[in-house]
Length: 407
Image 1 (cartoon, one colour):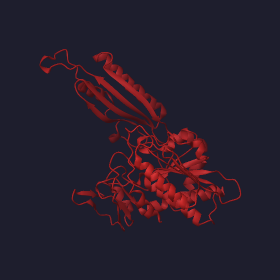
Image 2 (cartoon, one colour):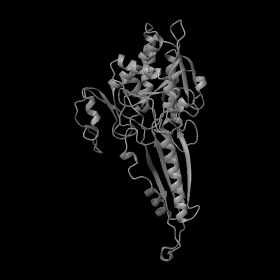
Image 3 (cartoon, rainbow, N blue to C red):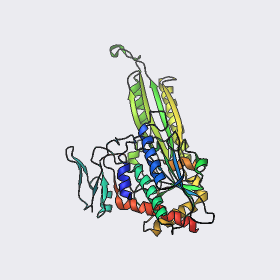
Image 4 (cartoon, rainbow, N blue to C red):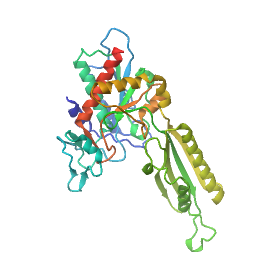
């Protein structure tokens, strides 16, 4: 099976995760897909294959050299984003893309255009896998899975390429922030690993946001509006007042690079009660802590104005910037950098404006930077991936394995 054939097969599985499920994996489709992958790994002759009840699939490609080299790992996640349906994905390949608009769905006038997505023009002449305009594609992260398995298959077919022991791991529920929670780092047994979960070809990431989630519940007092003077407290209006306290331009739509933000992700309520949810993000740990303190202060301000207990804040940390765990072992970044250059990919070291399983795994004792998978416009109908980018990612995996053995 070729790399592209694998990918097209994998996206046929509906593995959308569900934040409200409260179980791991959060959807049964993820386990169905994991069981399929387990059978494929068995057919490839891998060893130490395990699939636990939570959907974590591990396997080993044994070393083919007679000296000790570090055991490394490659990791990807089986779930797709809850943001859009991943059921009945029907991809097609646009051969030798010419730079024009791509009609994804004629009936609904869904068009993938370089006018809105100028990154398309960087892939003229390449073969693009696109959606039918009704679902996401699932390159995040089924491209990563296809690249890892294809690289492992290639190494088995080419024993002349010397490598140490390689572990591969596929986990559920990354898209809802739970992919690393039940990942058994000790059982995985690596000195370090790489998640194949990045975007554009060349991306190499070892910095990510520090992240927290905030939920604020505003209590109101509902009184007949005809007789409400000096009695009613409209929780919707109080919530709006709170939102206006936050810095106007420290939001996702106004920030880039290392700039952090407050992101309002839901607002639901009536006069009696309104619930508002935010995520807080910043690469700088000190500024991250300051953002949380600011939110706590604004809640106190609301309670001082409207009465104690009007606003209640629930604040929890989600993950932290992996940089502090990667810096002591920067040779793993150097190896990935050298592997990219060796296969003709220009490395682009950049901060992740988001999170990754690798961040949480790094804090669990497994240093785990992130390498490109090749996809773009994740989580929606405009998602696409160039075949050539997938091939480059696969070659990078092979070359990393080779370089680790050489060093």
